[in-house]
Amino acid sequence: MPRRFGLLRTLCVLATVSIAAACSHGTAPSTTAPKQMLAATPPMGWNSWNKFGCKIDENLIHETADAMVKSGMKAAGYQYINIDDCWMAKTRDAKGNLQPDPTRFEHGIKALADYVHSKGLRLGIYSSAGTATCENFPASLDHEIADATIFAAWGVDYLKYDNCNNQKRPFYLRYEAMAKALRASGRPIVFSICEWGENNPGEWGRRVGGQLWRTTGDISDKWSSMLGILDKQVGLEKYAGPGGWNDPDMLEVGNGRMTYDEYVAHFSLWALLNAPLIAGNDLRTMSDSTRTILTNKEVIAVNQDWGGMQGARIRKDSATQVWAKPMRDGSKAVVLLNRGERPATISVTATELGMRAAGSYTVRDLWTRVTTATPDRITAQVPKHGAAMFIVRAK
Image 1 (spheres, rainbow, N blue to C red):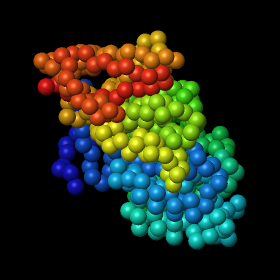
Image 2: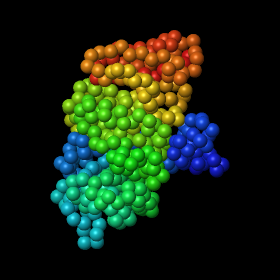
Image 3: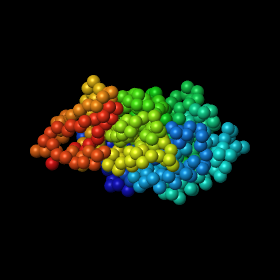
Image 4: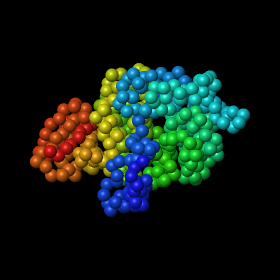
């Protein structure tokens, strides 16, 4: 257990980032979190939906768990194997409980969780805060206690909770009911609120008991979709912190409809945003280039580091942008983003980044793995639809 805190300090750790800032008289929130806190850093894992939709079965989940280990993704920090919509049978059982599809998940979710756990990984599952899921399978509205209880009995570690068929009932009460049921289940289960950002969940997601909350609708494997979601993250950084994260949706890296440079930009930006890094590709067949992106440990380290604020946009030009994030050691992570249709030279100064004055600065390129020095200005040639990412430190 952490040392005993006074009342104000306790509020700073447990409340939202904006409350924490107020409690600490404007200083950055705590850079550490209690070890027992769920999602003390952004969750990392895989989800079935982006690549497979409803075409899922227990063999896919087994093979994906195997691939997460063999590919090096587990070693890079990925933990969760998350089953999305369509895992259920069309009806509840005679006792009113959710049950898996008897053909596609014939051995049940408990056996699947046991297999995933045997690999040193964790299992996630899906439901909706409505009368049916988005694909019209049974969902959890008014069944929260029963469903949370059976998820815990199965050994589930993570719940993605959607917003379909919600009967226009108050969002806060629907999500709070499941959060309470999960806490009462006796098992620590990460609660992923998938409310699509309709009611500014950053303001209430942590309060109802969520560890992450979707800030937008669904992503698709298109450069324009990724940028549209990115734009909606501006200003949300105040809500993020240990135990509660803005979620701009899952990664599309490796699904084939964006270029390598676009995927590098996608992954770099999600890392800088302290977004959950939930891969959505086929881990069993991914290319070496996809694996290289998803397992870049220096980029992942930025995502998992909490320096008091998630990354934020600090400059917007015609087709280029600069995003930056404070790191706990006093350095800054920087993404230079080229949204345009031709290569661009993008620069930012240490002063713009809010760095302390120094004789020079070291600049570590997280994709080329090259370290250089500069008296002040960080510059990169960035391909069209691409990004460069750096760690900048004062000498």
